[in-house]
Amino acid sequence: MEKNDSLVVTCEALGSQGEGIARANGTTLFIPRCLPGERARVKVLKVKGNVGYAKVEELLTPAEERVRPRCAVFGKCGGCQLQHIKYRAQLRFKTDLVRDALRKIAGIDFRVANCERSEKEYGYRNKLQLPVGRRNGENVVGFFAERTHRIVPTNACPLHPEWADKLIDALKNFMEKCGLDGYDEETGEGQIRHIVVRELRGKFLVTLVVTVPELKGIDYFLYRLDQIFHEYSFYLNFNDKKTNVIFGEEFRLLKGKGVYECTDAGIVYEAGPRTFVQVNENIRSKLYERAVSYVDADKVVIDCYAGGGLLTAKFAKKCKRAYGIEIVPEASACADALRVRNGLENRMINLCGKVEETLAGVLEQEPSATIVLDPPRAGCAREVLKLLLERKVPEIIMISCDPATLARDVGLLTGALVEQDGALVKSDAAQGLYELRSVEPFDMFPQTRHVETLVCLERK
Image 1 (cartoon, rainbow, N blue to C red):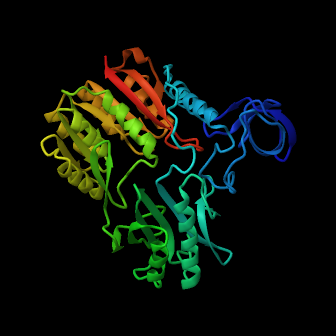
Image 2 (spheres, one colour):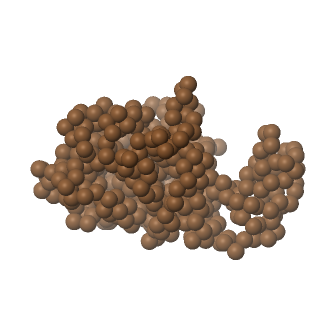
């Protein structure tokens, strides 16, 4: 098989990225937006050994699970991978994704619960994050293509509520009227890099990331925002460094309170522009409720990677005591305000710092605490996992947004993976310190290949 070959194949399965998998002439082909059971004429784009990549030229036999995508740039934008699949099939895919990651990466065969469905299949995201660039002398606002920093222009995104479409239009109009340019990553020229918006129950935090300390025409943009949002705060964030990091260190509040309060299951919490809040409110509530249900009222909890403290507060409200460890000062300050506002001064302790540097000291005081891990996509720091194994904590609850790093971390905790000559190799989990109690996927991100997973582990 060679590049540019055209052939007819039958898709056999879905890969971990949501792409179709077919086999032909001894080669395994990965084909985006092709579903199991479908016959398609495909064009080979790349071949390396016995692995190839292809695209669909003609769909000959569509699958029953295929639907028409809602988004005009689906397949170009890197945000969604599953809009062409019926929602019930998306849920099955994500259940299988978690189970297969545990089996293939860590050698763990375990019953994975059916993926918890989202109340909304579209319009569920409470956060919009748009890069702004310039191409061929024109400003472009949209989302990055898969695995690139090439912006795919868009006027609307069906994963967000209608306010997102209005905001995109307002930003484009503002830039055109005021003669402002999007950011060019190669030259470093252009005044506007990103716009980031967070919705908190009808209140909005809007942050415009710019490369210049003063931006002309900003009053006109605020006028346009007044027409979209009833209550909002507006920040200018200054970032003139050649980096992939979205925010710079300097935030300047130009309008509004800057931080807003919300209520979730009786907990009043605050969030600012840098505070982590799960993007799907419905699934977040289900996920947190399930996590809290696994801990007895007489237990002490240490919530690592705690964000703004909402989950920590839920544990503190039920349990004897809860600690929250968070590295972002703004988020930790929000957690402190939450603690006072909800009368949890004697049951909730917030610590600002790296988990790998702070957790050991807390475990000295609370050696029998239940550990909650909700790390970023890269997973837990290896030092944290080693510490938990050394201290033999009785119970670990883990929340992960990446099945691969989840499988790696669970493998290390159960002994199914061990370090050998700087690499991870499969081992006999029967000799490990922890065993799995439950694995439950939650569909935090409908229409995408991503899934949130709740895992409980107990010391043997």
